[in-house]
Length: 58
Image (cartoon, rainbow, N blue to C red; front, side):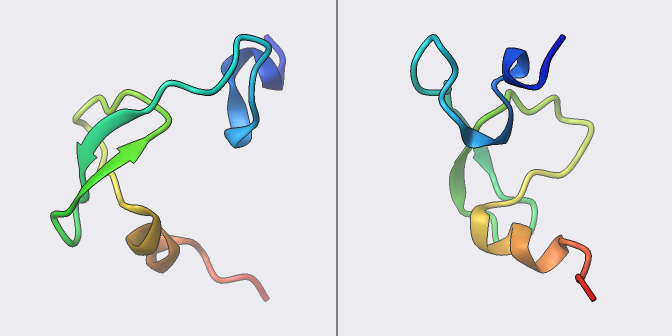
């Protein structure tokens, strides 16, 4: 399975735009959309909160 087979990275797959799924941000509780179906066993963050959880680059 190649990178594009998973629709990775926000790029369009050959089937068009990625399907987005509604979710609630685990931090700010705002409704957001994510490019994967949340499974419920891991936190989901909106774009802004996700930036706060990314490892810092040095």
